[in-house]
Image (cartoon, rainbow, N blue to C red; front, side, top):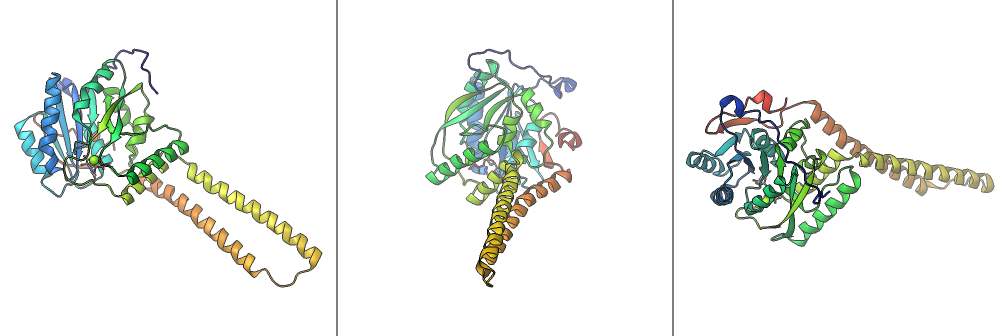
Length: 345
Ligand code: UDP
Ligand code: MG
């Protein structure tokens, strides 16, 4: 959905936090979920600072430590002590990237908000282009990968299949080659924050909220340091998450398969009746009986499994647990905003 020809005025939303304290909100909030990223932090900070100071905008760097086991937290606190524009929120354990990002979005105060990976795979140098598009009036500006350096064909192929499947099965259209790196206007973030789900499939949620959307191409780099937190099992589960969060097609497919099997057995039954009446009934047919029983059993188990996936998710949503828990924050002026409000109880 590209509106490159129209020009809309930038969305100006109210800034709920800083009015009271009299403090000016920064213009840009960079939101970084960090899980074992100690080696990347100095470079991340240096590059973000160079880019944003380069275009002379006020900014804050929101870092959410997502239960790292390495020196990420001390590293973040050190950055915060050097530069008060860095704000650090420490989650009580590892909640996963999507939850960590939700925490960061909840704390962000800027007029434009940009989620960024800590590993510098999303180059901060693209940010001025994103902001330029926002100034043209777009609420959401996707950064779209032109090339994927340092990713094998297996990852590329599985990503391709993933987008094909999810866009076929769901009502939303998730743009290809777009990660979480994008610009969101304040209005878009407020819309996201209204979404109460516990299982947060951000890629889909960003699209679901709508808003005028543009895209800017960029070259996705290899990880600056460290190892990716994903493996193929993780990616598989991520894909399942996406499909079940945004589509009920698997349930429908299960019922169609059931219907098909029922129809086939009906025809088979008719055939058996006719054959018995014509040729009598010598006791045979054990193999066909077994095949039918096993096949039906298999189909039923698959359908049950699909239903189970959804029931499990319903169960988790009904528990109404917070999406994340902030253990402590290090931020110059305000403490972490009141928890009850923040975690969208
Ligand atoms: N991340 C996180 N919590 C997790 C896993 C990852 O906050 O449980 C962060 C990680 O620190 C990084 C971003 O999410 O900033 C993307 O992770 P990664 O680079 O491992 O994923 P990939 O780029 O391979 O998709
Ligand atoms: Mg990465």
